[in-house]
Length: 301
Image (spheres, rainbow, N blue to C red):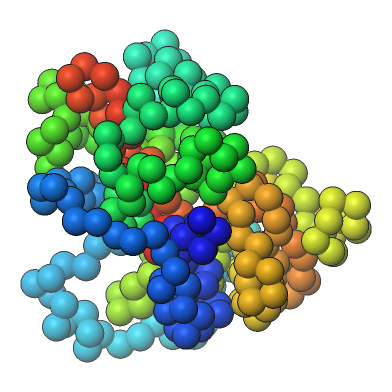
């Protein structure tokens, strides 16, 4: 179970931090994937368009020949990004039907209510990070299972609505909701400096979501506080994180620590509950037969 979690939650760290060999080794240990009974219609086309800088295919050839931004220009962009806090607006109206559903789900996750969670999941399998995972493999009876932590963390950040186009199972008169604003807000604030970089660019950074998040000298909550920040983007300490992954695989979505580097090159550690990758998983919800369902969880890669 931990090995699969490292793929779903930790891929954005592992693939670039621990090297291709580590990522490949981990992939061999994931749950056995099963084909969908029918071709999945849950591709995240709408939310990807809303959260990721798009590349115009008609101009790809031209884009590949464009001059790279100067080092000074990239440095200026980065300094502007790190100097400001990100905002994560919640677009859910407090008295709306989805707000009530989300509140019930958050309570169920807090209580590790297996029955409630099973009632909103697909009957047999769900797509997470592009992988089709059997529901039974989620092992929901284990309250410490990665999936509980993943869903809990995803629901802590604001949600935004999209049309249900491309989701034929969703009730026609309704839309869908995507929870976790980090990817969209990161892309809005700091577009990729080079179109060819793809996801590699986002692997360098994490967003510390919350007010007065402590960066500590060591990986424990008793160590010295280096600085406190709110909704800030910081660099990942790739070398330290790769060593941590190889040592103990500590990439729990809630527990554990992520090593980061401040703009002035000071190094610290942040509790994972507050650490979000720009590629973090999103939870996509829609109504099927007039009942809210968790459709799939894109991202995380």
